[in-house]
Length: 354
Image (cartoon, rainbow, N blue to C red):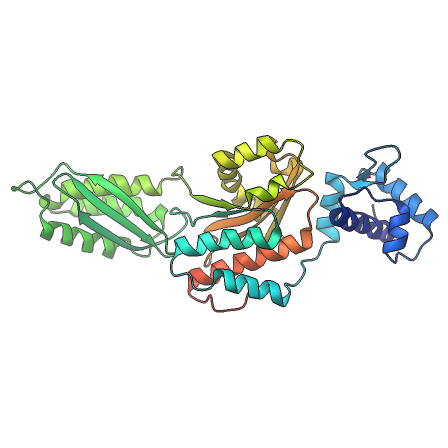
């Protein structure tokens, strides 16, 4: 489809259908949009768009609705991210400002995204695998247990209980040994990414004094487990009720089950890195529609997502909604919230999102 006029007709059909939820007829396009052509010309353009698979007629007497292919063309060639309004920017600042740690800001972020878009919002916690170590704390819990606290550069805090087999003569971990090991580990590991940790730990094991080896071995096992490629990632969701209010989903039960179990959502974000490399636009926002998501439970949905984080992306956030969504406004909200969260992680969250 190369005709600019027909592209304008497609844009008008998408815009009208998103707004009204009703099939769009040629008369409605003439009355609501200044397309500069006669109703007969619009009908001819609609017939061509239907032949090319961009729109279809759900019933014989009805107007037309966009197809998945039509939405895709609209997003690729017509949709432009709308600047956030002043009230929207104020809402983001009001919802997100004042958060003091990663847990708070992620919880507020997912609620803000759901409220701004009216869709299901999903935020992935920064992955331990993609971040760098800021601090490692070791605390004795008893004769056979140790608490290891992993703090990353994004502010994520992960706690692991470490089982111990090597102890001092009194049955307890020697505090002096534990302190030396903590200092040694922090000196060697702070600022390093997960892929760099294993060889460093191996070198430390070779050089460790005899009284540190048992504890170091136990800590090493747990730390590697926390950073392994298939380690469990964390996501949070908000706005599930927004899905139930959508009239587009004929298989709403299947999707709600997937959201509740989070299996599909985890798999969705697992594949987001490749999607963002291949499909992200120049704003860093990715839109996947229907079959492009490759998940049966999301066959009637669209996902608008963005990566966030300091420097290289460390995680993703996005919204899931019907294919009949306001793509320009949704893309703007996702981009703005991702930027805010990135600034929070770099300590510059006072900037205004846009």
